[in-house]
Length: 95
Image (cartoon, rainbow, N blue to C red):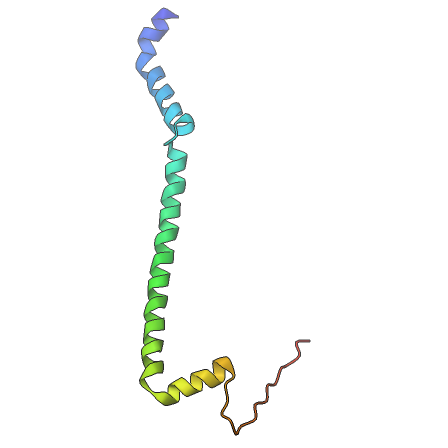
């Protein structure tokens, strides 16, 4: 057994260290893969929200640049009306 240890000690130590780093260590390879995947997902979400922010800013600029656009938005989104108008809301049944 002692002769076997001297012959394969580097292999045994290497397999032990690799096993420790893969399974038991707090910064193991499995956790690193999970964290990299999470970082990738968060970067995709960041890019999506940056694009959405640009779209909202563009719509805001368009909306507040013209009074007609603002009135149209208020009428469609918030169902606002003028004093001398009647508003009819038509709701379709989903069957």
